[in-house]
Amino acid sequence: MLSYQHAYHAGNFADVHKHLTLFAVADYLLRKKSAITFIDTHAGRGLYPLDRQETQRLKEYRYGIWPLWQARQRLEDSLLGAWLNQLEAAQPCTNALSHYPGSPWWLSRAIRQQDALSLFELHPGEHEQLNTQALPEQTQRIFADGLAGLAKRVPVATPRLCVLIDPSYERKQEYQEVAETAIRALAKTRHAVLLIWYPLLPSGAHQALLNSLKASGVRKLWRSELKQRAQGADQYGMYGSGMLIVNPPWGLDERLASAMAEITPLLGERSQYHSDWLVGE
Ligand code: SAM
Image (cartoon, rainbow, N blue to C red; front, side, top):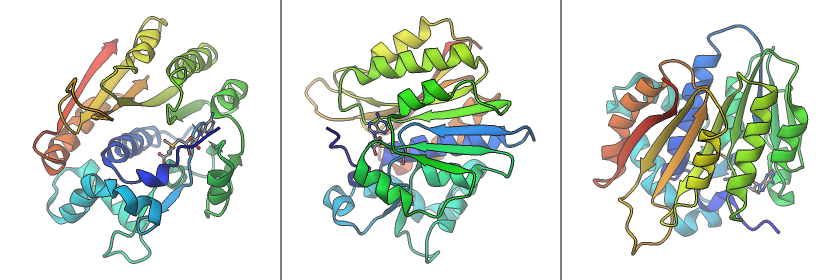
């Protein structure tokens, strides 16, 4: 039984971290002509109007994309500028932030004629809404389990593969399932670029995922974490957003660090960014 709906959280600080990272990775990959298969294992709806009741309930975007949008004219980082220009293109009226695009939108903006995009979504309602989005013809929307779908699709027909794994982690076992699927996919496609999102929670549940990947024999594993506040044993809920990247493009770490240096002060005075290599470099 799936209960998570991303509309409650659309545009929050974790989305900013995840989608900016995804945008930067795609930007590097698109510099070479050879075709890429992009797979989004947990796609969601694709586009989130911010005035919907679900999004308005928590208004998490107010502490995520909103301050960046407001500051966009004076931001200097080129990656951030390019990303916010794309965000502007997602708005029906460019002067107002009324919609926040999800990973299918960011990926669909990246693909070229020679590329392919597969979007898995298991929630019937979310999948139905994803079906209403206008996406390029090389896009497949699949109503199925994304981890099983990824395992079945590798190796892919294109020379390169880029995968976003962005579960809701409603079940504790999902951390281990993600690690096992990633390791199985890498065994068949060693050079695949995998982006795995995880929440930073007081329980430290993500550590099992990190440990499994570190121990898997993977050659390059990079971690990027954006904390909205410091971890406190007395606090509940997600305090930060994490991304693990297997086989990150060269230079990604420095490019993101410079964008994050501009973002963190806008997200609040307790916001912090940190990245490091878990394996390699
Ligand atoms: N990737 C999206 C984005 O960045 O805009 C957000 C995805 S949201 C965090 C997780 C989504 O995964 C939810 O829409 C949920 O319904 C879906 N989901 C949960 N379990 C799944 C599974 N096993 N396979 C595919 N989708 C699943």
